[in-house]
Length: 92
Image 1 (cartoon, rainbow, N blue to C red):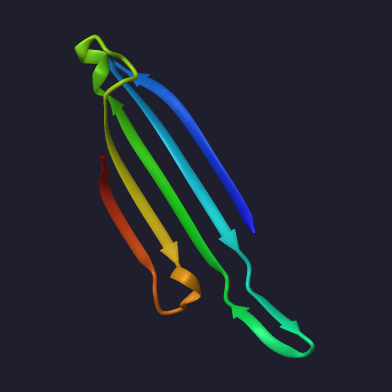
Image 2: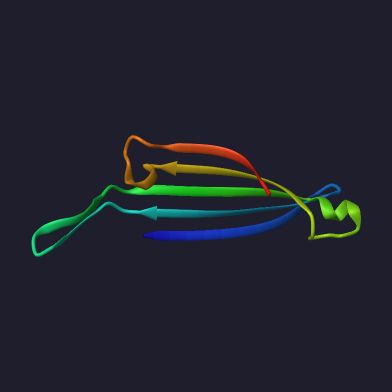
């Protein structure tokens, strides 16, 4: 399993943003106990990126109010080779 995350704040003109994310990869594996298969699964990848606009900067409360959008990509969701998911979504 490989698991990475990051966060990077930046500013453009009069706006303040940040981008954060998470990537998780699990390689396929076959596990057995005394020769009996107990967990066969295929590899999968989950990647999430979140873009945040710091709206508190405009309301004299910086770093307290944000508008967020997240994009999630999941290949072989829950080890199912027929299920891939791509979901953009607003964040509360």
